[in-house]
Length: 134
Image 1 (spheres, helix red, strand yellow):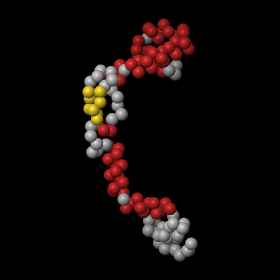
Image 2 (cartoon, helix red, strand yellow):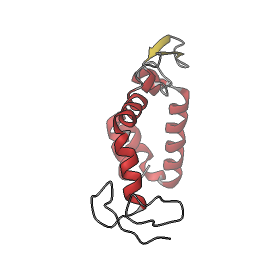
Image 3 (cartoon, helix red, strand yellow):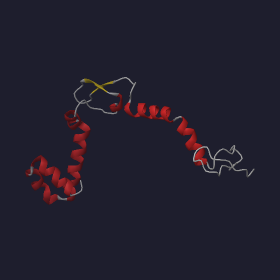
């Protein structure tokens, strides 16, 4: 390794050395070498990231709602949705099964609360379940 010092191309310090057998002595550290190479391609990298996050250029996705059977179109960035609307998602059998499972567990753990829970209505029931950790 040579100890000849030059000015670092990235941070402009007079400490550029050959810091490893693979470096060419233009930078003072690996961080500066990486920063310099990404700064040259910054616009290209930003475009790729933006395109990936927003889904620009990707086609819309057509799906069939498992609850009502209606065909609906989603933008690419929302392609993971399953139901056509929040109403259908709530009426889904999986959601109903999850709620009934929670209620069964609640009734087992708190048998005295069953009547109060049934009388309280939907919002009261949700609040009671939330307070008890269900």
